[in-house]
Amino acid sequence: MKKIFIILGMSVAFTSCKKWLDVNKNPNNPTIDVPTADQRLPAIIRGFADTYESAGTRTALMTQQIAVTGSAGNNYDLTRWYSNASTSNWPWQSWYVYTASNLDAYFTAAKKVEAWHYIGVGQIIKAWGFGTISDLYGIMPYDEFGNPSIFTPKFDDGEYIQGKVLALLDEGIANLQKQQGPAAPALAKADVLNNGSTDKWIRLAYGLKARFLLHSTKKSSFNAQAVLDLLAKAPISDDQSTIVQYVDEGPIVTDDSKASIQYTNIATNSVGRFTKLYIDYLSNAYTGAPTGANNMLDPRIDTIVPRMQTDTGWRRTTGMDMTNPAVTKGIGNAVYNSANNSFNKNPDSIYIPLLVNPYSPTPAQRIVSTGSWYTRRGGQGLLLTNAEMRFIEAEVQFRQGKAVEALAAYKAGIRSHMNLLRVPAAKVDAYLNSTSVVQDPASLTLSHIMIQKYIAMSFSPENFADMRRNNYCADNGGNYNEITGIYKGFKRPAHLYTLCYPNATDWPRRFAMASYEINYNAAQLLKADPNASKLEYITEPVWWDKP
Image (cartoon, rainbow, N blue to C red; front, side, top):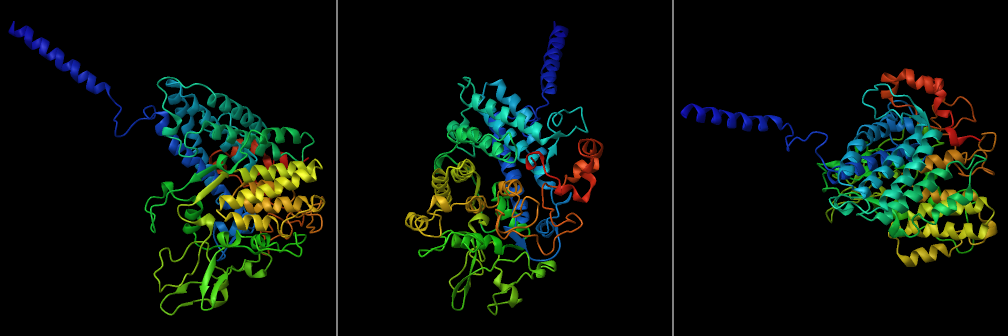
């Protein structure tokens, strides 16, 4: 009997040991199939926000919203329209590595518990990311990107990807309208973007469809009514906008995982300054701007444009003139010396930095910069807003010859953007009733609409898309023409990288391909577009940017 008990004891011991050995999923270091959909979603949203807003920083440099001091580095190269493998890497990496690569496991986890709302949100983010990146680069791996057995995926053309994106948005809408399974977590548990509102996600999806379809205005297949129909289901009020709220920790941000992207991007390279063109647009100081007997300064200007405290009061920054040969060398980065209350480079102190300085001033300290609404800590990312939808509506109505409807939407877009920036209602009303805003439908031009949209879409990659499809300030032959051009005053920079733009009719049309694809997937890249290895490749229009 004793022997039997020993054997039974050993059997129990081995059984227990086997159970422990079978558990390879350390809860403190989970494998890919452990996290649930609600655990994954916040990181996916943050990853996409980084992708979108970092692309917006780069296009803000190319579309002459911001310039840089100094004469070296990636940001300086972008201001001279030189998009190379280094300057264009991050949006590509942020999307593929930190966002898109996590979607398949996310979908699998959501399907296990019939979390249809999570699946719908994921499909919208997937469509949004691929649609945005393909519009920037023209081509990218789509069909084969997630196949673990394919190390060199083929590239798909942007037009093909858009078809997939539009279908995916429809699927996302359908899943958000389903009843979730009994074990599915509520969307509000993890939705750090729209707080669990399926209505806002659905409106976002329709707004994205309208945005993507608008890009093809040069195409004979462009369907204006289809865009208007989508706008009716997209955000129609400010509270239906999709806005990411950033959470910075304090004066010194030790963990920037939730920090404002524009603050982080500008702080990393603190030489950013606003351009003369951008300030001219805000000041109505461009050819053909609305004017009359009752002009009024745009009340957004001191919210957006930095000011400095001087001995005699407050002074707004001067904008950097991108046509001035001085940008060839780079304008000096003035540094404030608090000991003697002066700058080390007085001539360049007129260019005020974009970040608040000092962050927490004492009563005796001079305010070197009030900063900008867009580059503040704890800021917001305007990912898709009612303001954008109204400007899309204004453009489409204008193209259809409906000037009255276009004027109403143009004014609504300005009002919405001012509301988002918390401009007092009385100032909003006064400005919209002034002669600094078009009042007569017969006087409204496409230029008026697009310049106001340019302001409302600050730090958004959509400005780059809009400028390309509207041919900047060029005529049909590609030559700068301030009479017929849309973006008045947008000229080739004095420090233009002429190797990429040898002709006067050359304009930026796409990002250069990311270095990862050039270094590790060159054969597939050149198979998709043999011109991808040429310097002039960035002047090659993407599919919707040509008739």
